[in-house]
Length: 470
Image 1 (spheres, rainbow, N blue to C red):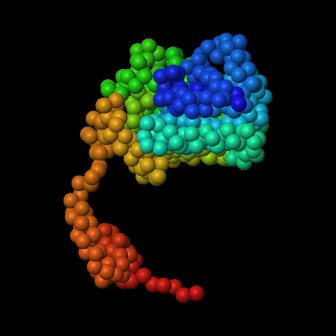
Image 2: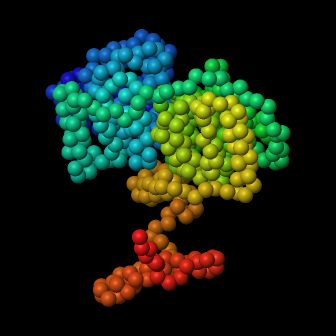
Image 3: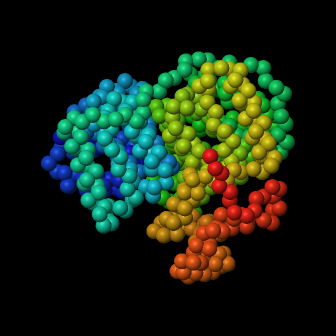
């Protein structure tokens, strides 16, 4: 079979992901392999139509397409995202139709599911039969069983493609509402005082709804309200994956373009942050991808802790659970309070007016109370992933993270609550006796309420739980 690898790492040959691809080439050398570095060459593919067409011709002659990339800030790198946008914009989607597809991503498992779900959705939108995703931790290949799992994954892909198996579809075509949002008269704006609002967006001329949403929200405030268009900033390029930021959080682009100054002087000094974008394929635009990954100069440390955050999305957000997960996970990683994610898909201008007006009020109220919602699984799980990796193998690379984690209590293991540790040891010893275990079980439910006793909650129940009868 002809196998084409669409490589999405900005590091090309020296990427970790490429080592997995090379291992597959060596183990399955009876097939014809070719690699197109669409991320590292994204600038050229944008400018040079012949170079782009050459990649599309490789797709056209392939039997199987393997998307291979690292996970950069919850998704694929911006260069690969931009290539996918160009495929649609230049009418090249037909070359992918009917091909079999799979994805291979490497990471530390921080929302790698989002990257693979995105690649599957993109594949299915292009008319491809998506077989499977393989998402190892970066160094799984050199661990026991790592090569065996990689080979087993690829045999599944080859069997499906060879037999032309029917693949189930996880993502159906997006249904977009074609309507123009014209905001109505708004209420009196609210004075911000010494508070700052920044609305960051990427609206093009044709993004009328997004521009109208941004305008409606910005008009709700008087005072320090800045509206910044990502497309008007001088940003030289995407994240290079060079990791020079790991020691002191200094980016290789620092002082060479507008990004760092905008990020530090505007976003990090704001109190309310609103990010606004239009759905482009199955995510926001490549400009937004670039923003998220260039913000990694702060590495695995939160940039916007304690701030109020919201997203405005023009497009079918309710049909894209993966996009909502990415935006929610981003806010929790940054330790910001995500007030809302609003979209224009309802198709009702007055309803959208009311939602945007309410968003402004809600953000101000949460800011006044200093409210940040507690982490759910995404925030807690992500924090644990970072904690374990920075404490372990990645400490030497991300020394700035290590210092921050040690200073702020990220390293919370083993627990320093010595009373709990001693109590657990005593319980484990006591539970060797069945009678003591049974006595404990009879009182465990009520015992779970004991920490709340000092709150003197009205109506707090006591005694054994009652069993209702039918």
